[in-house]
Picture 1 (tube, one colour):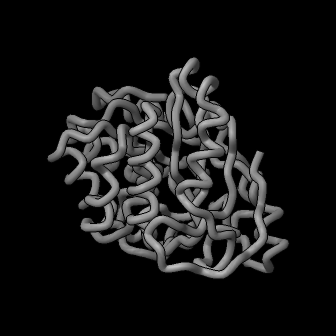
Picture 2: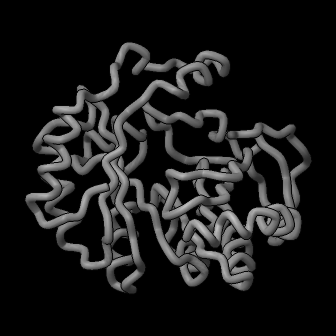
Length: 255
């Protein structure tokens, strides 16, 4: 369950960060049961974003690493027995690399598995601060066609592809995530391009095909944002299986 928190004053301390909310028993952001931290602030403007309230860096609440770790450790038994751990997502966690690095470092020091869920849209130096403390990267690649990527996100795809190549170079375990949106990200040539690219990476354990949903639509309306996908339906099972098969034909494992 996501728990929105009130806004507070920003601090420049590297032991504090700005988060939107936490989910204490998440099951979709990495292996096992996970304590999920949603950071505040994102440079992307994805058409299908289900957390548009994470956009602004001024929102959310300020929290210290100590406070978060204390809360996380209350769930240690559930996390460990399920083979789970802690996932930092957003928003975009790499907008706050010092805070996220310290949080994940502390979690690893407690013996907890750590995961970073990122769009990859950041300076490589930011990722390099966080990755030493990350067991698994969940890399969201929104599209492979560059024009479609910009249409979906309003930013360039190049930083994401650069991070994907870097993760491969350092042999960092990665799951690639792809949101399947009918009439937007599902053209066969777009999926094929992504599958060919991912197949060149030896560090990718899984490709997760995530079906589009409308669960965040009410947030767009509440925030007064123009939600262009309000009439888009979730993908059919046939479409999902077609896309999964495209990835599988390139030797990729699908979740």
